[in-house]
Length: 353
Length: 239
Image (cartoon, rainbow over all chains, first blue to last red; front, side, top):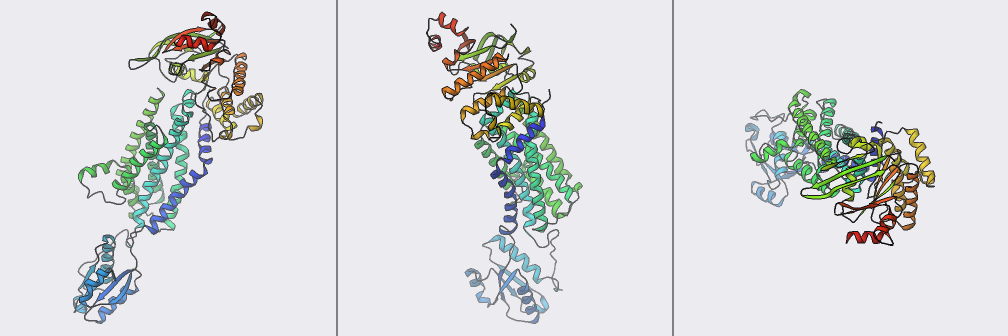
């Protein structure tokens, strides 16, 4: 007598299909998040209002100002006097002021004043202004700034890998943990445990459908990233997919572990939120760079899988590193996956007792 | 008579507390064995040991010819189990539930089809084969859970308070189903705390604080304790 795994997998599929609302959420949320982060919540800065202060309006000055006003990044609000600079910034009439040297034609010197109240915009505005003004025609500029990998400083390049790191963890880990805990709550787990089903069957049948679902998500995300957000995916699609599948497995293993610890769906959700979302936001380098954290926090970040995944995705998608360039990250995630799987199955067996 | 369950000094300790304290009994093939006791008397713990869900701390036992200590997996293949809580999948249809549990016990599709049609016909429920279980009334759910527990023709069916929260008429029907299965040779091991249901059993054991205080047929017990009903027997024993 042989237990049929297919019967189990079919049952899990049915659970998912019978709950179209959850299915929809699982399939739509990644799309929404990607588009939200890609467009709305972008740190890209367009239409920066710039005032110009140029006591001597030489041809060179005019030429530079023209270049500013033609750029979609800036909106020139007009010429102002030196005395007005402070007031213009204070009242918010312009968020940056460019002051040209009296002898700009020869010296090429200019000064940029930015409204530092909004650090992000200020920093970007400064970088943009610098690059436009000391751009291609400036013979005298002392140094050249060159943004490699992401010359337009698009924030979607930054966010797409981050969102992927978060979404897969959420879908795989949260959904599997909830679906196992649910069976404990309703009492069906007891019946499964009395039956001759091996725990590993239960685990596989819980993992498979969610692995499939999140692979579907992976495909949509990559398509959106490539064709809507113009993220290059320059390291090769297969390395990205291969690396991501490992990450999916890790997330599934994490979900299994959570389901063993949690006694109810609420607890599973809470643990998922605490264990998965918070560390991803703070320690993965998604929003805050990890290298200038205090050492204790930096050590925590070394354990957070999303950190390695996001790092690797940035390398693979944007820097165009080949797979061998992310072997360290791959190794670490592989190790963590095996560790989590071992811990989860062990705990699961203990439950059978 | 064949003994399908034999237990000697079976004990389960949680720390220093003995939830089941050295119980010994045996059950014959085809018998309806009532396993009675107050809440917390240790019924469920004892039953879990018999089902291979939990290891005994001491003592020995054989279920369907296999050792509860070492051959739990073999026991699991030969028994059916219906838990205290309703335990079918509410979001699946009647047939899909049967399909799943048939598959768990290694039945192939054609056998599952035949067997489920036969079972549903027996309780005149064939028209509801493709209904979502969650939409059915509780009484029917319980009956279905019983049918599913017997899908694979187990030697012994363990029923843990199968009639909790069910109306008297459905309870009657439920016991008819149990009788029918037992006359077909399946052993029924039933826990309950409805004492009127004890009258349906061939033999009953009454557990108090982890020990079996009485074990005999309902008639013999009533005679021995000079009681008119099993209810009185129970009250006298537990006092």
